[in-house]
Amino acid sequence: MDQAVVTDFSVSLAGSQADLEAAQRLRYDVFVTELGGKGALVDHERKLERDHLDPFFDHLLLTDNRTGSVVGVYRLMRAERAAQAGGFYSESEYDLSPLLRSGRKLLELGRSCLKRDYRGGIGMHVLWAALADYVRAHEVEVLFGVASFHGTDLDRLAAPLSLLHERHLAPPDLRVRALEKSFQNMNLIDHSQLDRKAAMRQVPSLIKAYLRLGGCVGEGAYVDHAFNTVDVCLILDTSRINARGARFYGGGPA
Image (cartoon, rainbow, N blue to C red; front, side):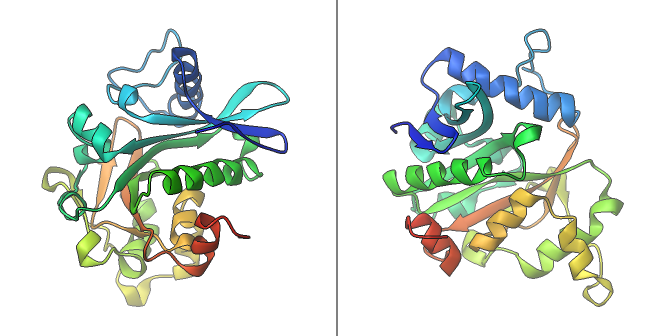
């Protein structure tokens, strides 16, 4: 994938150990320092958030050309790389059988984050445009990955989880399910008692973005105490993508 330059930003795939460590350093700032996450392979001395699957992912890096700093990252794993790694990251939380037996080209997304000062600006759009190029280049048919709510207080998150279950549950052929050992029911508030507008305001912006493109969620949530999050599995079928998403992934005006 060639480097793509847009305004003050450029996006490229990590091509060296230094590139990978730049991604891991930003992830440490966001997931460990900011959000309180932890993990067996986190390097606190060098301030790197990492795991054993990093070498099998492609890492998209968003660079601020004015400073030369990596300010956004996304990691991407295709099925052939997952086979080499022994499985997808999401398989530690979800039964992916519906996707794995589909015979379709899969891409797992994860560890998406932006440096704090760049959130709400053009940076994420630039990163997503590069992701769209990657999807087209590899003829990906289904994108998926876990996305997180910060914190593990299920009472606080009952409304947005219930909304996702009611309005955005994946169709049966794509409906992955949280593993039984950690399955957390998302249908926590009766539909008649749910304030849907208030609930949607609690949904993180990344999850909202996938929903706007026509994405959906698997059944059940996963409480990740190590990362201090409640995770849902997002799924985006490119053949069922909505009109707005089709323009985006087709390269036309969004």
